[in-house]
Length: 103
Image 1 (cartoon, helix red, strand yellow):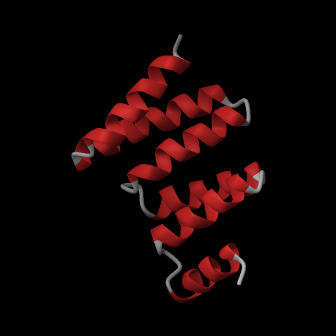
Image 2 (cartoon, rainbow, N blue to C red):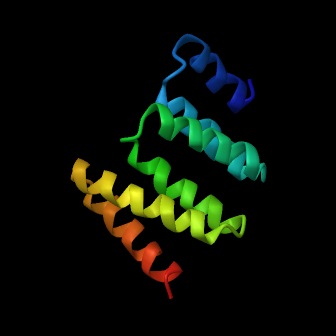
């Protein structure tokens, strides 16, 4: 079974399953379908604004699409999320990326 089809089957049972939605977004990124991936990241973060990994990967995808200002905004929100969650690793990753983009 196709990865996306399997993850969509999970979403059919649980439409707000963040792990499945994140998996779909990541698979779409790997296939080069940036616009669909970003739509999935948007849905993910709308449904689960505390899903920290979604911010970093969405920002990376936005940078790859040449959308630096949007990536910076996504990182700033993600940094707040990571700080609230106590996720030091994600916090450091996003802060480093933000510093690089701000140069």
